[in-house]
Image 1 (spheres, rainbow, N blue to C red):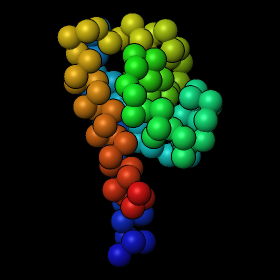
Image 2: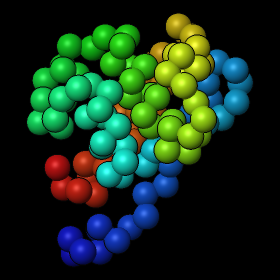
Image 3: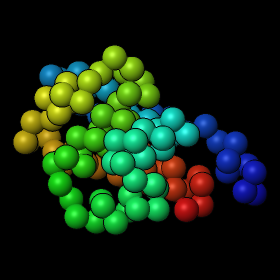
Image 4: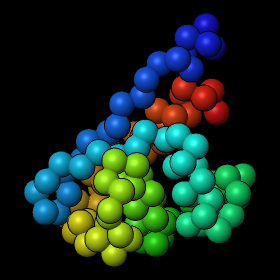
Length: 108
């Protein structure tokens, strides 16, 4: 059963950002995990502790790393500019969806 779960292809999550365009986030893979470690300057074991205290910086980093997978030319500044205050809840929900899907598949 575990092998079948791991074999499932996880599709990117789509989210409409402030420019009105739809973007693909993720899915989480080794490159995304590496990006999280690099951008947060910590291991994955420490990442949960950092994310327990939400900050705008965290949201921008998560979005940037997840966007990079499907939109490789995007910069951190562009990622941040694509999130207006009114869509923060939708963006946060989309990021959570991507991360929860990876946890389900990986059994974390």
